[in-house]
Amino acid sequence: MKAAANQSPVKPMTYDLLRAHGRRIRWGMVGGGIDSLIGEIHRYCGRVDNRFDLVAGAMSVDPDIARETAAQALIDPERCYTDYRDMAAREAARDDGVEVVTIATPPHLHADIAMLFMEHGIDVICEKPMTRTLAEAEALAAAVDASGRLFALTHCYTGYPMVREARALVKAGEIGDIRQVECDFASGSFLEEDPTRDKRHWRFRPEFMGVEAIVGEVGTHAYNMANFVSGRLPVAIAANMTILTPGRETHDDVQILTRYGDGALGRVWLSFTAAGNEHGLSFRIYGTAGSVIWHQEQPERLVVQHAGKPAEILTPGHPSRLTPEGFHASRLREGHPEGYVLAFANLYRDFGDAFFARALGRQDEPRLGHYPTVADGVETMRFYEAVAASNHAGTWTDL
Ligand SMILES: NC(=O)c1ccc[n+]([C@@H]2O[C@H](COP(=O)([O-])OP(=O)(O)OC[C@H]3O[C@@H](n4cnc5c(N)ncnc54)[C@H](O)[C@@H]3O)[C@@H](O)[C@H]2O)c1
Image (cartoon, rainbow, N blue to C red; front, side):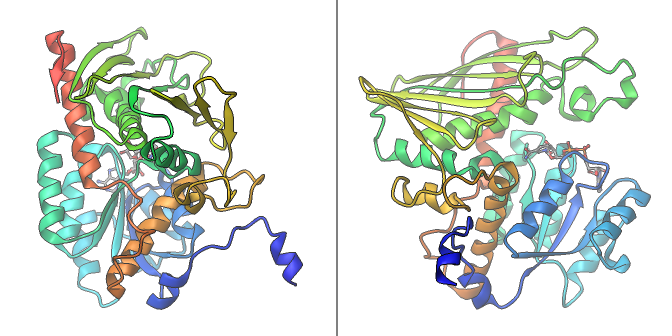
């Protein structure tokens, strides 16, 4: 028995907080119906670590799709709602009402929905971009502070073991003092514009998130990634936004220079026109002693280069070769690929553990607090507005 357990690809996982809490979290969703791009991924993530029970939802703007999505998740029809306001009020009035809600609607609705559920005492997991404007983001941050609610922002790519490893190495000084921070989110998946305007996804229609929607859609991920791994925020940016695809009304290529307080520099490239690329998220961070390089499509490989030495390639699951942060985020033993869903699920696991720790009065656990928060959302929305302002003015803009 013992030998078989040792050969299991599954790394021993942590269920102590769940067990001490004695039951899973009662969880609901707003948006993320089967008519959406991202909803099913959240449902996978909630199930992976056994911390969440999906018990209620207002999961589509279309009532039939809301009902079908709830039916597929075996949600009691009584708790399938067609209006999220109704859901918030009725769930808050139940003894067994939802304790956490995931918001996976288009972004112009996030702030209102998050505020409403927090007012009803419900913790929030929110999709990015967090809000429509910086003012909304700051108001939301103030509401989170005042309410004491937990709030996670699903910059899901920060859940990859090798991204967390890169952050830990940079923090430990492995690459020296940082000089350049580069991050691309340049996708090749949206090369043509749909000629039928009404059928276009909201991310290509300016009336939802403005002509700069790309900055919210992929730019907030790239910017958050650069900040997460480098552990720093730029003080100024210079942006150039363009529409390269004929017939498109929203910008589809954005080139941004960044400048840090100590003179370090950076670059963020966002695009929906990078023909041949797949998803297109990557970073390269250079310091005085070396660099870390990572590509989302090969997420198990972190390239670490020390000046004057051969490059090293780090992979997940090795207790002796990784930092505690990289190992904590690994789920499988070395040599067993993990991928996008398990990385995204790390945010759900860490949020679940923070929920249990709060209930148990054990907030001092060192493994807690690895998910992006409302403060990250404020910084990404500051960036969002600064990119638009810099492009408009044609100059550097302070953050
Ligand atoms: N973390 C990621 O990597 C990632 C990936 C894709 C999308 N997203 C984000 O997720 C969010 C949703 O994006 P998407 O591409 O899935 O959008 P989508 O338009 O494909 O789906 C939106 C969903 O919300 C529902 N909805 C709309 N209005 C609603 C309302 N008033 N009440 C209840 N449900 C409502 C729709 O019916 C649909 O189910 C966006 O903020 C987007 O930026 C994040």
